[in-house]
Each structure stands twice: as C-alpha cells, then as structure tokens.
Length: 332
Image 1 (cartoon, helix red, strand yellow):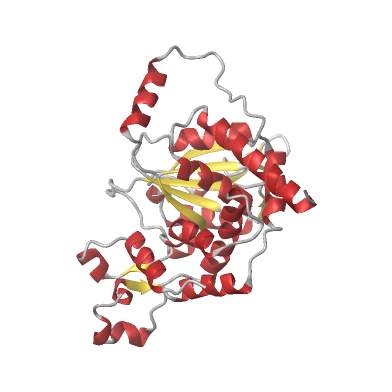
Image 2 (cartoon, one colour; image 1 turned 120 degrees about the horizontal axis):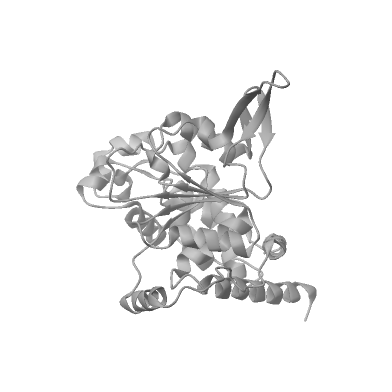
C-alpha cells in the first residue's frame, strides 16, 4: 500500500471514529454530523436551519468537546450590541487606563443561536470575525483563536422580530444545512435515552481530537481534482447567474432562470471545489468525480441564490432551483 493509500485509510478510520463519537449523543442526523466535520476540515462556517429541539446545539457542543476546542454560545436578540459579541474597553481606575475585555467571540467554536434576530451593527461585527478571523475593539485589531468556526442557527418558521441576513454575510457561510425531523424509529431511541437515568459523566469517550482534524485537512489537500471537474463546477455556478437581458426576455418565462434574481459568486465555486474534495475523502477516494460535486451542491448553493418573486409565487425553494440546475448542466 503506497503512502497516499495509507493516508486514505487513516482518514477513513478517523472519520469513522468521529461519527461514532457523535453517535454517542446524536441520534441520526448524518448530514448534520458530516457537514460539521466537512466545514471544519475546509475551515469554513455553517448556517444551520431547523425548528427548535433537533439537537443542533447539542451537536455543536459535542463536537467541541470531542476536539477539545473552546466553545461559546451567544443567544442573538434584537437588543444585542456589538460589544456583547466582540468585547469592549474597560476603564481601570488604578492605572487610569483602558483594558480590553474580550467577548464570547474569542473561542474556537462559536454558536450564534438565532443569528437573524440581531440588528445590522451586530451582523457587521460578526462578518468581520467570519471573514478576517479578527475583531476590532476600540482602535486595536485582535486576532481570533485558531481554529475559529462559527455555527449559526436560524428558525425557519418564526420570522417575527427577525432581520434578513445580508448577502455578504450569507456568502461567508461555507454550508447551509437543513436539519430535518428525526424518523419515528430515531425519535423512539431519543425518547428512550432521555428517560434513562442521567449519567454522571457527560463527556464522550471518542479518541477523536484536534490533531485528527489537522490530519484530515492535510489529506483533503492531496485529493486530485481534474480540470474537467473544475469546469463542471464553474458551469454549475455560472448557470445560477441570469444575465440582466435574460431576466427581461419574455421567452424565458418557462425557464428556471426566471426564478433567480441574483446568482452565486466565485466564492461558491471555491466552496464547491473544497467540499467536493472532502466528499471524495469521505468516500475513500483520492480523486474527485462529478457525483462528489452533486452531493455537496445543495448545502453549498442553497443560501447563495436570491430567488425572484416568481419562485415564491410558484412555491419553489432554493433547493428546487439548484436541483433543476443539476439536471440541466451536462456532466463531464
């Protein structure tokens, strides 16, 4: 077995260990568990969408404990201030000077709960942290811990008192994961476990650690991606961008382009390439195939499309439009 195959085998072993560790607390939710690991390997952020009670917070906390990462949870509310997120300057009477009191964003893993309830100033502060891995307090810029990940949640059914997330911020999320209800069998397991006696130890017994994340990140960078697959990725993203004259062309009224007001940026192409390589690693291959791209297209693209009025009128979601694009664009 050559060196690269050793790397693939070691990667699969670590991925299996991670899944087993998460399964000690999380029942089902394979897409959520794999999505968290994928974003962590790629160094990106995740937007989680799902109704309350689906173990989103528990999944994030469990991952932080397994990887020995510092964890902070921030409940976003309409009265939240940027200083509540990044920190502030505190006047010290003894020295007659200001000292920095760092906020909860100074953690490896930040859970931004109900992120769409915070006003624009807070979103702006979070955007700097997500994009630049740094925050500004007063006149000084402070680097955030490495690694740094934001996992944000939003409730899809209760929109009263919420703010629409700016497109620039949405584009900074590598993935948007939709967290579904568990199956009846999975929910039976959840109820049975919750009715058992509470164990004294809340930690997981998985040997997975931050060193394994670093190993998987290095192996993902070795995954080969052919120029034809890159061309396929670019074609998929380009297909989300209707030209201004196309949107006005009445002949396209029956085409999917009428459902898109604005398409994805080149950042989406980069994200597709990164996630497709990791998907290939999950599947035990050292090269990317178009099916890897298709497997990650929905979570990568669904939050990067701005849908038109016609999409809402016809009851179509971003997933519907992306699925149509996947069927239209030729596979190499």
